[in-house]
Structure formats: structure tokens, C-alpha cells
Amino acid sequence: MSISADSLPALTAAILRPGAPVAHRMRGIFALRGLPAGPATRGPLSTLLTRDPSALVRHEAAYALGQMQDTGAAGVLGEVLANTAEDVMVRHEAAEALGAIGDPAAVPLLTRYLEDERVEVRETCVLALARLGAAACGGGGRDDAGGGAAAAGDGPAPAAAAGTGGVGGGADPAFHSVDPVVVPSTPAAAARTVSDWATDLASTSAPLASRYAALFALRAARGTPEEDAAVDALCAAAADASDSALLRHEVCYVLGQMAPRRAVGPLAAVLAQAGAPPMVRHEAAEALGAIGGADVEALLRDYTGEAEGEAVVRESCEVALDMSEWLGDAGELHYTHVVAEGGAATGVAAT
Image (cartoon, rainbow, N blue to C red; front, side):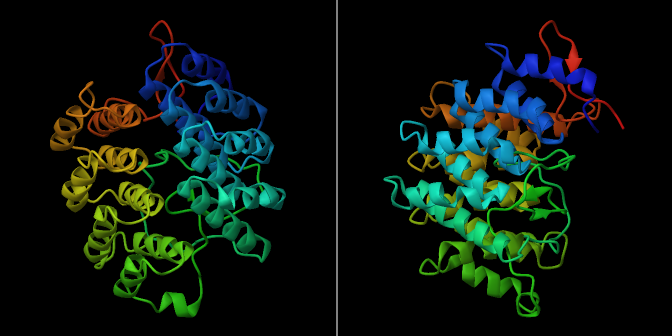
């Protein structure tokens, strides 16, 4: 699937239209992410990042710019990170995007926020700086992950990026994502078992980057005989309310990429934790949408009304429902199909 050059203006107009449904704006972001980085895609994504009223949409725009590794977006991402009045989830995503882009020019800015008042921002900057350091040393992320296509979390990936504008490398070809850490690709790492990685993930005294590496290594078990054990380890980490919110939200994201049915119950339990950080519950909701199914849809609908006090959770459930309904509708061409003003379909063409 791809977006034709002719359809890009209509897609842009559709997602920037005031009052456009959140699910349509999110679909548009996913569609733009599948295009080469450049002014034509950076413009609407930057507009959403800085002006959209939804923190969920703003955070997703930052994610897309990072995944596209658009060096031209570093300025606006830096401004968002520096804006301490911005939602912490959006600031976190801006910092992570700077790490994904891989330009060492971001090091001074990321270093400045290692002492931010928000722990999620501090931890993200630690990870982003580690990623930049790995890239500078010639690391480039994973090329040995397990099968499967990304489907949820900090941005479902309906298609691999058509091109990148950055210098960071590190895109995982199996999951079409640029991960926030570089997982070692060495004989010693290859000899480790799912049990070994699960132990690393559960070790709260270990550096966060090591635990992140463990969760992405567990993702690589998708499609292997050890998948269930890996999923169970990830579900246990997601459920630990005493652990890092940043880590838990990333675990939920990975579960969305893997999309195992056995994770529905644990993810539903995370979503139901009313006192949990919104960024964690948001990822649990979108992971459920990636798994899909009538039972999941019934569950998600319970969180789309005003009884759910967190706007980002309500909106995430709306997006997750949209994803799940698409998964069950063979008649729709692609998840990035967006309905433009007036009812015209835009955003997708078969290739």
C-alpha cells in the first residue's frame, strides 16, 4: 500500500480539519509515516505536534517524526521537549524521537533534561543519549528480531517507512520500527534464552537501557516455541504498578506489536488501573486494539464515555476500537484509509 502524490493534499486537509475525529487524525499520521521524510510530510506532522488540542495526537505526531528519522524535524521536537507546560507524554515522545533520528546535535539538549522534574522525561533522555552513543559507535539497532508487523502502541505501523531522512539507522525490519534502544547483536546475546531476558526485564535494580534491551529481545520470540513464555514475562512487567511508568508503557507497546491473544486479560487489567499513569493505560488500550476481536471491542467501549476521566485514555480506546474494527473488516483496503471532508476516501492506493 502507498499514498499517491495526488492524494497527499487531500489527506493533509482531512487530518488538519478542525473537528476531525481523533481516529481519522491518527490514521492520517500513520499514513504520513509511510512516506519519505521531507517538507511535505514534516509540515502537517509539525502542525499536529504543536497545535492539535489532543495530547494523544500530538504525541503520535512526535512519534512519527522520530520513526521517519527526519533530521529536519529536530528543531520542532526540541521545542516541544523544552516546553515544560506540555503534557509529559508528548515531551517524552519528542525526546525519544530525537534519539531515533540519531543526530548527535541533539546531545546537548537531551543532556539538559536529564534533571527534568518529570521522571518520564529524565528516563527518556537517558535512553535517547544511550541510543545516540550506540549510533556514534557504529551500532544500528536490531536486524535479528522475530517476525510480525507492528500494529499498535506509540503508533501502529501499517507499513514500513518508504524512506528516511535521518542518520540514526536502527530500524527493525521485522516490526517496521526504530526502537528506543540498540539491542546487542553479539554471540553472547544470541546465546541468551527467553528466561535470561525475562530475568533482566524483571530486575528493577538494572539500568533502564538494559531492561529495555531485554523487552525487545523478548519480542524477538514471536513465532517461536518460546513465544508464550516471552509474552508472560512481558505481561508480568506491564502489571507491576510499582515499576517505571516509562518501562511499563513500552512493554504494552511491544505486546501490541506481538498481538498475542493470551495478553488480552493482562492488558485489560492494566487499562482498568484507574490510578496508573495515563501513558501506560493508553498503550494498554492501543495494544488491545491491535489484538482485536469482539471481546476486546466490548471492553474498550467501556472506556470511551465520560466516566473515564483521562482524555488520553478515552481517545486511545476510540483509536483502538477503530483499529480492531479495521482488523475485522476485510472490505476496507488499509488502516491508513482516511475519510476526507465531504465523505471522499483518501490516503491509500494499492500498489
